[in-house]
Length: 169
Image (cartoon, rainbow, N blue to C red; front, side, top):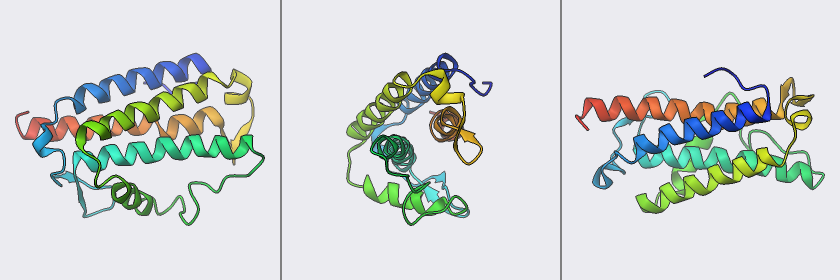
């Protein structure tokens, strides 16, 4: 999918990648959702499909928090307080822990809710706010949203499909 450059393109990317991911997630057997058999976000680690969903929820919520902070006149600490862009395995581990006790069906509901908040965020911004000027360093708000939501959805779907195929699911 090409990199979005307008609100409509970003919304389309979010809808399409989320829909494809949801279809893959629906194929994960509930009894295997917590099985740490996927390559993890840190080299040499393993994660479960539930961890993968927790990771996506975490990033969606971070993106929304960045915009909430800015709306309150607070400059957000990106990616998050205490974390740096070159060590993204650490927030991944935090996201896994934050959602470790959430049952699979509720985890999927939380991902849907987080995605809905992202869509509402994008709908609340116009093309100028999304793509008219740098929002973080050289990146526009639209690009930052895409890099931390629809791109990871695509990556997650790819991981899941490989896992599902390897296990004959």
